[in-house]
Length: 330
Length: 222
Image (tube, rainbow over all chains, first blue to last red; front, side, top):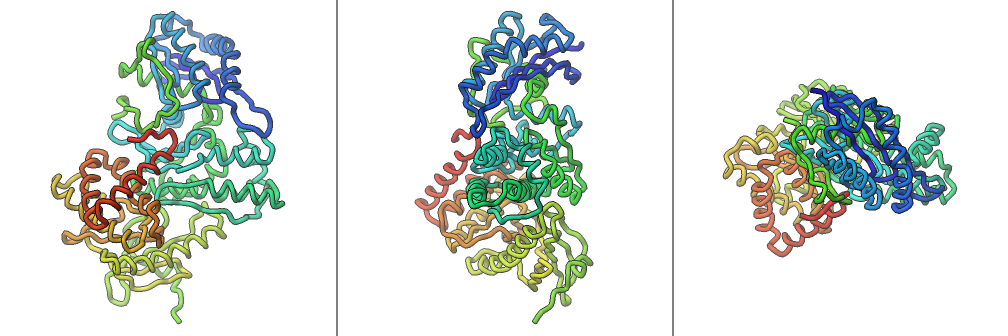
């Protein structure tokens, strides 16, 4: 029997609601994205106010677009974490309200697991080495024994933070990835930046400082953008290649907001070819934060009877994805 | 002066392993059974960046293979260093990678391996060497003894932080790739490590390892 699950994403700048069916069709995916003022990042409280104000409209839009009614929903899932506390709480309140008024199970979902599972659904990837790159994560992962296992990660900034903090130094507002990619495409002038690989881990803080100094010293935004992309992306491609060689897997999947960058996906494609591995990317529409990642993972979890009583439901600002049991793969 | 043979000359060998940054081929070197570790240009990296990294890691690996022996840790014999071709020619180490043994050996034998692993890691650290890529794929067991390979990311350092980074990678590899064996293996490894550096330094290194783990995103310390 076909079932429907609604999912709510509100971990950071995006408030989004989606309805998916048990066979993996995304029936709707409506969102509202908070845009910070120029030169600054996400202010958690202001983002949460955006979510609060836009929640009813986004929810109504997702229901209207799905073609199913509230009574058809089998479960309500929400991003329990990780993320910004004030933002997470808005999604949780909406989810609790829906679940208790409809009398259906409330299903907590880890946002990062959501990125991966939605990526697998949309790309058909079965057992990939995953590069999760966004504002919140820079991790290389592979599945083994009921968990997504971390094979490498950033020890300080995420790739998204590197790009955003550099872009904001130039006066842009987050997210800055697209502007940096555009600026980089008009340069071929490589300026030397720190290349920091420690085993399977990477570090970007030195590179951020060096990039800001270059900009302050008169280098052009496009030259420094080009140099950051060439250095930082080569670092994550190298550690992904290490994980691929180590695990012997034959698929690589890039997920998260930075997956939209074509230079990164180009490097990963060149790398994977050396190992006869296939590369897949989440389609642009779903690579950033969205309700569909929560709804689909919510269905997977619900199908294995994962739920939380409304009274005991909470949000977790820190919730590493290698702590999440995954009973639906194996 | 020696001249470079160029990458194509080494490519005559039989491919043993295609690693992340190098092809490892087996062939003959002046009548000896040898492996060629060829750091080929990586297509995804800008050549100005790639050339510098490959050159630096080739030279460093040759130096560190030598220093490891001085520290009492077995490493392959080095036959030739061809910097222009980013290639090392080394002894072929006939044995099994620890990676391929972890999940198949009886528990006590597995623990013995990791005790020795920890002891040798500590010998490197005591000699001021951080291996830099200390995974289970980079240690080979030959006739019951361990041989350490792949020193391309090694550096000379006595900093506690750097030594803890080595220990973190072992832990990350064990928990990530061998979750069933990880707890027992780590305990054995820490035992071997403490035997060489002493309990105080060992405790300090594990404490620093926790500090590094805390820097990971969304980490809560365990």
